Length: 463
Image 1 (cartoon, rainbow, N blue to C red):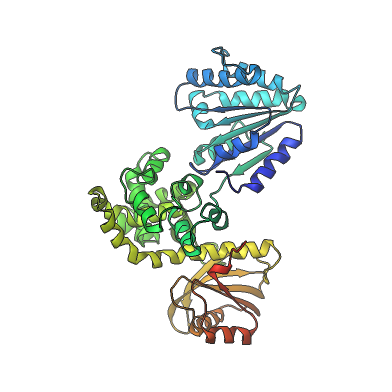
Image 2 (image 1 turned 45 degrees about the vertical axis):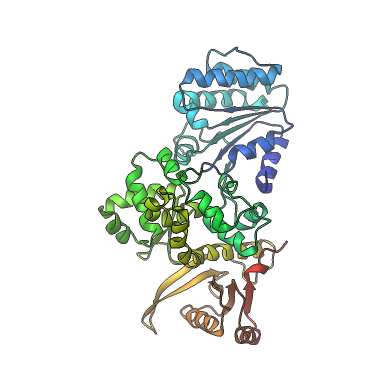
């Protein structure tokens, strides 16, 4: 099943329609749907598709040659070019007469096996680009390799690309297209558990409940997702043990660098290096209070929901899961799900506000959204605001998100208004988001104020 990616497909088709040489670098984390996107795009077009393998140069060249010759003749062949340069030159010459796509998937595997490949591609681009109708796509899952060896300033191919595309997981609204048979609440829960990575979404069975899906995937040692985070990490880093410990520390509440260091028992400088690598890989993110660029208040959070759920609940229940006691493991996890969903709901609310902005329906024309935390000098306590965004120094949006079974009452609104006084904004717009709605007192006060929007979760992404 292929859903979403309308913007990406439109961008690819614009490049294709130029009928001149185009060079796209397409990259993103494993399982995010890069191959599916390429397959969808090249369907019905004159295209050569080749996937690199983790083998030697000879094997990759033979496979590449087959892809080229079979595209040309339409029949299987055992023929092979004598070099990658000869094979690529043949493709470039083909493209002088017709529009042609060459998509090399898992490019890092090929480039690692043939060290001169990048320089060869650079040479041929410079030689043929002016008379070529080739659309070249280099695709890779190793973020560090694609950014350092393909996109970076010192890379041989720097300056040759005409476009790049970093494919991200789906946002919540797109994920809902996978989960049409689930209730609104269950859709949010599943998004919080597996995130927006297409390959993970396919592991969810819409004939089962959320509880049964959790048991079948995360609490089942034979499932495709049970060892997925650890296996993915092993493909990206050399010392997965310490990386695992750091991610687990963050998932279980150690969010500051000093806390992470203490939890894993390593020096702060050592942890800092590993954390930076995890940020580069897109597994965790660094957060600072909104409006503060460099801050000692910086904290770290897990970026991907599947990683966040897995590292929060699976390691501590591993012994139980290994004994096949999925029911017992789930009973231990279930009481923590509402609290776990709090941050997930905040992210869903932020995505909703972006949707309003892009549709021209948001009262504040912000350019970024964030969370704020810091000291309240009046109460001499720490204060938090779930969502903060500003249009300028005078106008801002402040939001609070509540994933609870109780209706949000007037006290939540009053607290948000009070915390807004920590900022000098003259024009303030308040948004309250609630899973279960609002009390009459909160609704009446919001109407009286006139600058408050109350949003119930079930109404956020109605078609």
